Length: 310
Image (cartoon, rainbow, N blue to C red; front, side):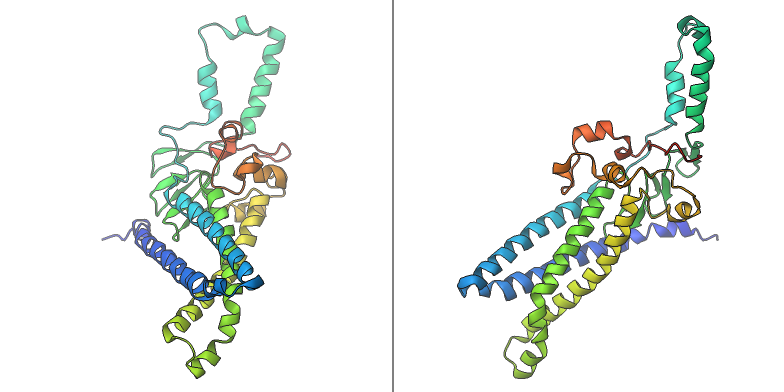
């Protein structure tokens, strides 16, 4: 009996569902430790301390709402599926552009050679068409087959067990915002809980607080500190990938290239993920104009730098 390791990869989905429960548990523990045990009692002390506590609670809830909004968008949004019977744009354009009239009747003879030469150059600028034997469908540029999801994903970055989903062209922005807001939330939680954590052992020795509350506060501080440190590395890494227009899968390919073919400068690279409308940069949303005017957001076609050979 042959063992198919790729089919076993689909078992990671079960681990992913456990991760969702773990994320919910961490949020509940952090909320109880920060809002109920630490900041809540300070609201009734009056003065500047109450005002500061109220401000932190408001910021905490704003970040929490944004964090959860982005998280559920990453979980439930399709990362980008290849349309059935997909073919490269140039091939489709050639078929659609054909007509019953001879080409010489439509274009002057002198311009015909120039038009064919220009068309040939544009064809050469596009990567060779690829095919996925598992999906039995064409593979657009930057598309890869996920062994966990059992399908091809447009501009696939990676499969994330924390969201039970792939991160691709359609939800990469949501994933980046989720990382950012989670990092800010954990940093704030760690800062709020730090004074209590410092006094933890003193309170344990004096039995001046409930053991259960001390345990929750200690656990929340350790978890938030650990996540803040690990998320810092992820935020830096994905910021570097974002501004160079690279995915996690393409890192090795980019290292071998003299000049990365998808890199058009940090501003345009950023807009290919977040869109051009600044008002929506911090929300898991895209404007209709961006979806129509920026092909990279659809995940099927990407501009290639003219100075790079395909």
